[in-house]
Image (tube, rainbow, N blue to C red):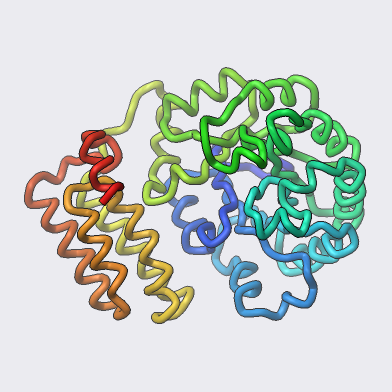
Length: 344
């Protein structure tokens, strides 16, 4: 796929997710078939550029091009400076966050809260585009502030006029958070009215759903977030299905085990043992979600602070599953069992 002057493997994008799409996760998803991975959002507040967290979020060492960095904020001048700062440090695409529904972001009129003020949106987009004339700028947004105020089309037109090169739209409003089902009519409408690429996002959790949304919206690509948590191979599954119309064989327990262990090693190398062990817990939980005995396993895992012990317990869990059968799709199990595990 040709996208903003770059040749991508395909039109499948990893959604930026705070606290999740760090460098280890982005690189894993790229290896598993994603065409592009956008970083978790970094602050536009220049006072925080020197913080360890911000530096780590801006660390793209070893990542394949193009490097896409998402910035967040509400002040046009600060966002422009953040764009320049990241472009000088290797960002090849700057993405502006107008999609995050989190209260701590929206309460300072950033993220999807910005969609309430279209005049401010225009000032922000113009300022950032002017700040980095050699770097393509993209926009991530929602369908609107709430269901009574869906203004994605209006903002998409503003974005195109301001020089934004592509738009990703999550099929929910800010008020919806992540509840209910995503809708794609708004995305289809935007796609039909603008000439820049439109990427569809929201509830894309299977190859069949991916094909349906592409056909329904006419979108240029798909952005996948929560469905990739603990299942980064969803990108190769979708890629294969879109190319051939057939499904890949179910993942083997041994392969999922290997992917999980390699991911944990990358997390530890990136964050260090103390922080890495804590961050690894949520990923381990996602890799084992819905599997027999995983509720008890997750509870025990959250008490472990030693990385070697953590790895040993992960090995024991997967090896026990492998003894029963190595042919197991961890995300196509009995629904009743899944509900019991998640409720435990």
